[in-house]
Image 1 (cartoon, rainbow, N blue to C red):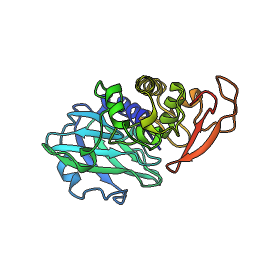
Image 2: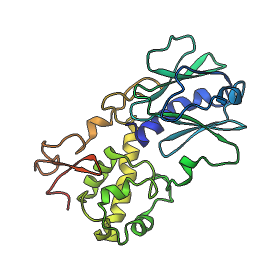
Image 3: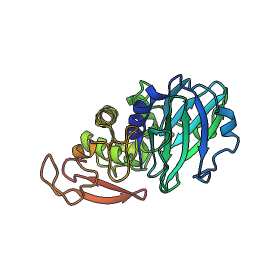
Image 4: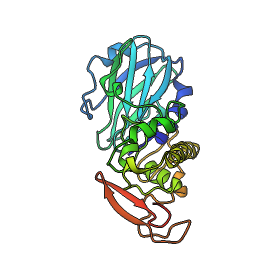
Length: 270
């Protein structure tokens, strides 16, 4: 699943080609995504200039005067720029045709992504309950300490809760916990303030490194330029269950936490 670094990589890649360009037309070949594409959307944005492209958690926000289009990449989606005349493939479900002759194309084999509308001056229900951005100053050690206080749930599940902090998906939760030396199973409320402070720093660092590498491509993800992400080469634990720890050589253990694959070093992480 594309996580925050992959979505941010996409945003940075396509933003210069959208800013202040107009959408000539919206072509929806398959409206039945995770939620139906609003049938009125084409009429709302046709002929309108794009005022900006931002990100909230794993949502890309394409801003127009009348409101904002929310795009989610789902489980295996990608958003990339192609020549407007390029014929669509089987899983190319939505095109934003631009006045430049390019098309911003949503490809989504599993159809678990979304293209939704938020009117100007309102906040979509999917965004209303989201926590702070992990790379912002709002996400700091005191906030995580408060979120973990008295909690018996595993720390990995706590940092993956979008109400606590957005965008810390499975790959990067595994990597940040390894870098911080924290067992992902440890009860959130039983971790010292000092160690939570380090965890906040490692979450930020891991995400920043992943963005710099264009995200992580495990199977399907490509950025706005059609290229894969290269952070996979830097993964220390995710997807490496049964391999040797890069720090101490101990065999990495793989378990399930919250129905998600979790890999850690039983020696380095406590």
